[in-house]
Image (cartoon, rainbow, N blue to C red):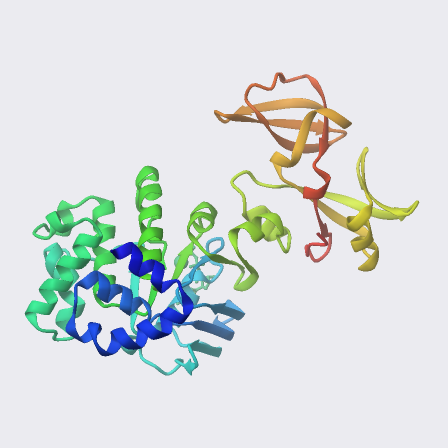
Length: 402
Ligand SMILES: Nc1ncnc2c1ncn2[C@@H]1O[C@H](COP(=O)(O)OP(=O)(O)OP(=O)(O)O)[C@@H](O)[C@H]1O
Ligand SMILES: [Mg+2]
């Protein structure tokens, strides 16, 4: 039944029809909470940040940020500590005032709208549960603030608890719960408000690795089911890659790239994104780019890479020359054959695969090979690159040529 509702909802003409119909009829007759969540999901919002900045004295915590977050989209803000993720989130929540720029919810500028009127559910790293209250009262709290009738509060608390699998914990105090259970209570409390926007700031970082993986999947499923626009702050690229529809990569308050996980991985816009995305870091190596013989040549010490075809013409078109940075992922180095040779000096077993560190004329490359591949430290080894998977960046700006 539920599944068929979701299927119907993904059929666009039906969306408009259902939206109106449900608002007028079923919604007011309150047929079951999950249905109601789904309907509320239709109320989701499009968030647009236009030239958004926040300065603290001389610190440009957020610097001229432009982003469009679609209805129902799950967007991750990803970047290292201090890059401005939380500051951006707090501006969207209305807790910080922007120094410059605008925040739109749909077509409305909300810069002057107070936090309580923005219809936002927030979940933080520190779950911020009230320790003296039972789980039930923690979840009920936002509804009590809104002075909702008791019966409605009870129904909503139980439905949210059911959705998050914590029904049997309603009588406990937060101190009697595990970290994962506390996190679920915090989510339930955000959920009962029926927000049009979820803002989550590192909500899983206090959990152990195994629980984090489990909650990651649960959160993603819940967001998909409810369709509530969600902004999720994390410095963990794996979390962002596995959960988000799109990722905004930030560094030093500036947007580096805004794209799907696959695009970020395959077409990083600059060396920062290239180095940040991917569980095994990309090899980034300084070289010198010259043209000759109808091709471009990247000289890396004793090793030369020739670029022809599309890659060669891109470089010629933009007039690339001089310092350039090679980017190649460990899995895009083929070992055991090829035009280059190097010395194996470290092998790191990873279980299914191993990382082979190759010294090729002073250049150090890390290659990923299957664990069964026969190679020892001290061996000479031949290798080559998967040419079409190579990245090349401008040595000065760090921007990608390809
Ligand atoms: N209230 C404040 N007063 C002064 N500087 C601040 C304030 N809040 C944040 N900053 C500075 O703004 C920058 C961005 O901080 P922010 O908290 O947004 O980073 P973040 O990306 O969330 O980092 P983390 O991953 O460590 O949480 C940092 O340099 C920080 O020191
Ligand atoms: Mg933060």
